[in-house]
Length: 198
Image (cartoon, rainbow, N blue to C red):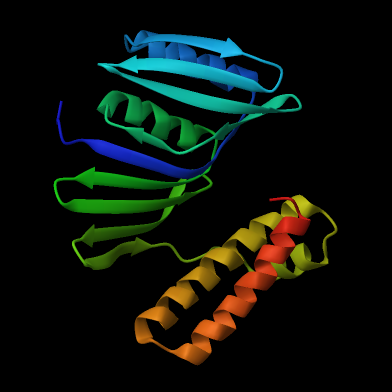
């Protein structure tokens, strides 16, 4: 195993049913991990021994489903692969930072799929890949008119990603007017997200 291997998982938004957690436990046992789990009224906890480290995955109960909470730094390649399989299987969202030597590769994952890939080396960074949003005008109009929060939430996430990209570009160009305008739009999006309880 590569001793400098390290992956950091941030802003995880994965939702599960009980069966998916049981499948994860089964996969961990099959891979030979020593682990134990416990459950309380509001939380399910899986503690996994990786060498001398103990990784604790916390799942918050939300009615009859679960949501993973917290940020995790994983230094075990196999465990990292299992966590990424989980992100993919649940079509979850995450920011994954792969740290190797003096280089960091950052993956933005939405709905289990990479939408942006950035390589950071020292002070320099370059965008390796960026997926264009695949939402038609008709879908956006329908979502705006819809009273269902779930439909609006999908579009809202795309709008937020797009506006963050606009802000980033404005910051790179040091365009004060565009920065202020973008921050104003982000504040409105944030307010709407709070209303939708996202």
